[in-house]
Length: 222
Length: 113
Ligand SMILES: [Zn+2]
Image (cartoon, rainbow over all chains, first blue to last red; front, side, top):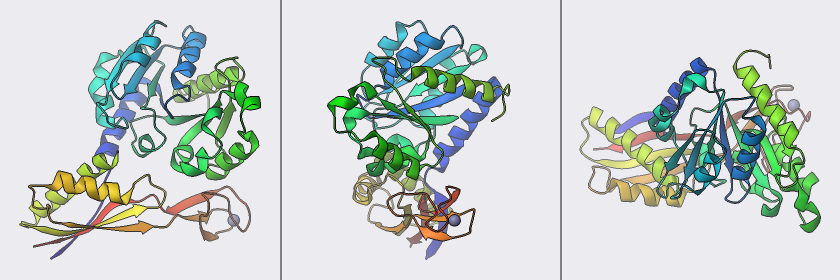
């Protein structure tokens, strides 16, 4: 006997993600799903962002990591609430993991939650975790072939950060080619070349974030 | 290996569906996987076989159809196969493209006894 099913395999995850999204919407909190390879500079970017914006915005961080709490410890030093999720080898965060830790945060006082996903260009792109937007970090040292190799994570991102641009003179990374590929994959995406080392471009990123928070709170139209 | 999470999702769906139809054995599972997903068919089959052991799906054949990535231009109406992940209309170069197919991740149908 044949049974027609036609069910989305990620349906259950998407249902939990939708419920989370509703909770964040009610609380007026912008939620960023921060994606990128290990070593692309997600945690450094997060540290710079917290330093620059913690007086302006009430920020909390959820740190996804395979086994360690190293990144969470780095963030904790900046005096913002941090929750650690260890996936125990799992290559991505899913909506249930976020749901399970949310009671550790005081949603009533927050403007923004940044969820640093597990370092990986493949799997996290498939799983919604209740975020408003995905931000993908690609660093110059990873090579300009990555967008066409892992297109989904660039297609799903609202903003793509090209980190470590201070290293451009020392690599064969073709910035123009990478920007062209990313824009072809996702026309209209916000592209932000930055260097967490020199601070170049970070101001633009901070302003982008502040604008997203204002849009979320309904203080500014898109 | 997120294929393991996806395999678990498939197993949950097929066991529930089979139970609703009082099936005693699942012989075939037909999946639709879009070209623009990050799923490795062989990893998925491997993961599913591991999870399905000791269930009524443990000898099920997992049959995967890959759905090509197709876009439709909202400006001129042209429908086209997306090459090299370029989401620009080949006819009018508009960037206003609707993804028609290629993002599927679904259980299509089951064969049961
Ligand atoms: Zn067109």
